[in-house]
Image (tube, rainbow, N blue to C red; front, side, top):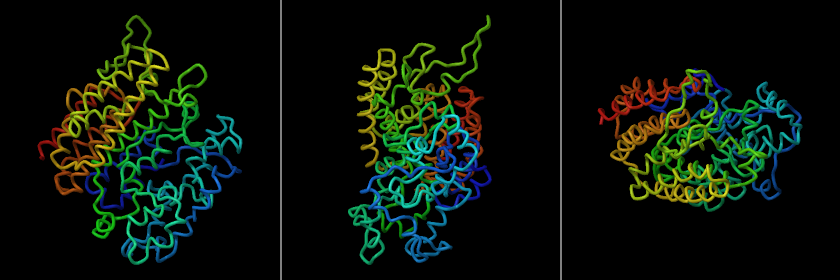
Length: 473
């Protein structure tokens, strides 16, 4: 994991602004929760087998070298028109999150990864099957390129030769096979395969893998996009893509798609069970990883959660994205919010009824999440709505559900994303945002260390931060 100094020093994009850069510095202190954001969460000793791929996929990938011309994306300084032209340099930055994708394969030589592989007893074939689905590009030309350009932008065979020619447009590039990363649903689908989990080979991090040393998976689409951004959203970007990225929209869609993905994976019997036990990667880590008091003065460490109708001692499904979706739905889709909350509660309750009931309830909740993703993808997310979502995140109804670390962390990321989005949209000044930094940092401090997380302290800190932002309205 990169240190806070490295992270802060490489906040290159204007989107970081006065709000996001301090969060990047703070991210280094959340290694357990966010190490996935640097795409360096597993490793293995050489030699390794080739990454899983198919002949068709390989035929459509041209490799990093095809993008690396000095008049294309391989220039040494960011002075190109219409793009910076130093995108390759940003992708290769050796110490910052911006270069994490290029390091995804290289980290397999590092001590932490080697230790994980030894604990799991993996040989080269095991590493290929369990790791390379995310640490190397399926169809990539060279394993050493890690997660390369085409992993995110799509195989370039159909559009490489024409995407820069006179008359080229983003719409035409997409029609020729480029992945439309301006669509938050499409971007989330690409990112989630590795930053949350997919059904492809080597794209699902089990509890056993985490027990061997792999960081817990956590995902927030707008934040992770900011960390990996290799471009400026200037006037030319807006002319080519149609608009600047709406951070609030990407955040909301990302929450819905993350829940959709989690439930879809849970519905797969081969992924949801580990022998006679459930696959614990789906559950809230801190519901089990708590201190034990079993003397005469035994005192429970868990708080009652109104969103989970479960008796004490029942491991709850990780509901961090459910909590965020509940908050944003109350503002952006009030007619669907009640149904979503009902289905979320029913899903939690179904865990006491058996696998069949849980899968049925997961399907219903997934339908609601997918509908919300579609609804949010076309929503404006304006200034008034942004402030309303902030208020809702700290409301009594939502705040009472911050009983565990995962949901609390998501709310802090949401707070920063929402405020940063308003700065980028010009609805809150950079100076005002900077003045709010002290309150936001207190909320960060309340989730700095997962093992000392105190829900009531966190709720107060979050409420103070939201009240400060509201006062700046």
